[in-house]
Amino acid sequence: DPAKTNPAELVFPAGFGWGASTSAYQIEGAAAEDGRGPSVWDVFSHEQGRTRDGDTGDVAADHYHRFAEDLDIMKDLGLTSYRFSISWSRILPTGRGTPNTKGLDFYHKLVDGLLTRGIAPVATLFHWDTPQALQEIGGWEHRDCAKRFADYAATMFAALGDKVPTWLTLNEPKTVVDVGYTAGVHAPGKRDRQLANVVGHHLLLGHGLAVQALRGTTAEGRIGPALSLSPTYPADESDAARRQATVADAEENRRWLDPVLLGRYPEDWLATQPADAPLRAAIKDGDLAVIGAKNDLVGVNYYGPTHVTGTGSRVMKHPTSQATWQEVDPDGLFDLLTRIKRDYGDIPLIITENGMPTKNATQDQDRITFLHDHLVAAHRAIQAGVRLETYHLWSLLDNFEWAEGYSQRWGIIHVDYKTQQRTRKASADWYQTVIARNGVSSHRT
Ligand code: GBH
Image (cartoon, rainbow, N blue to C red; front, side, top):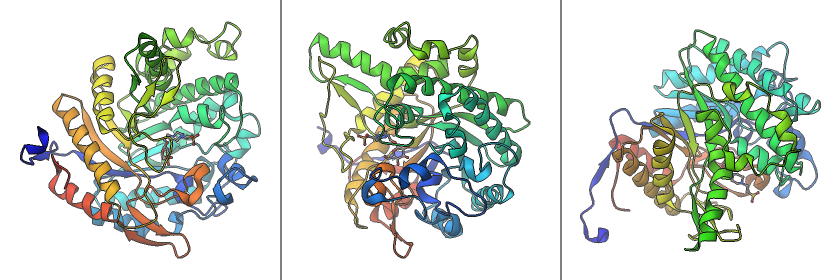
């Protein structure tokens, strides 16, 4: 009975990275400042009825102006890693052409500020904010966008390659495909499953070309994707549910991991694509070699598991968070991490996102419990031989939660959107002690 065992200190390996994660459009604000061009999210969030209360990222957490204060907050917490994303349209306002010096300056200052404070920068090149100018000529629907993305990536490698040790190409291509192009709930708000799969392929191609671009420079940084992954389980004992869990596993995980790590789409997933599916024509000879070129690491965004019934419906077997899509199950993280090792080998892993939303208050015991339990699971995975190097919680700050606007608060730092005042939540104090002792207790406290 684990409840009766004495609490033990679960110590993480020396040098384990303790981080927090954010993304550009969700925190920066300054949407039209210093030459930044609009992205699909600027346009989408300003359309009627797209986001809760019509919220936009125009100001967000005003991080563009307050980054120095935010860097000090990170330093006080003791973070050793910080994952942020670069706004493509801040660097290339029309998606291509001459880089905007003021945009580059901002990320130079941010990265320098991290390095001065002993915090390792982890830079994501694309967190869903495609330049609107590219969207107007088809965006990721066109193969050309993958090349544009690689050119932008090369611009960033040239600018920051000697300072940034870890690069992430795409954040959650799956979400762009499923929510941006199938459900239509995220930018660009389209509902076309066939087109979505083409977009998914072009995103993967962009990933591969960006990896190639880094290899072509003298930059020593490591690179990989940040994938949203979810272990899938049958909701009951039936054979039908077991079969549907395999189908869901292809959609949730293998569809993204196999191309990137094995250089092929999963056979069972590809078989679901009709002979005349536009995806089939979009896959050109040689694409999968580009997509499957060696990665240095994989970023894992873990929010919860997926349970599937015999008819393929998705059901919740654990309580959800305030985000109704989020089933909370820390053991799923252990299963996911050990599964990646088993099926894809010993590639280094970093957790790029993990967290939950809580009510608008600084006493967030529920978040502490969530983070604690997931860190216990991560520790167990390390004990089982998983090469997990770094943990980034989502998120450092309350921020613009996409279609949910500012109504969902995911930060360990509270943001008052009227005054932009930052206040530490109880979880921030707790995380600081975790970092200081490089471990967590085996039991909740
Ligand atoms: C991450 O996505 C994102 O990378 C990050 O930017 C975001 O802030 C964070 O999670 C918290 O949500 O509303 O029913 O259409 C996590 C994966 C995929 C989960 C899209 C929510 C929308 C479900 N997300 N999904 S629904």
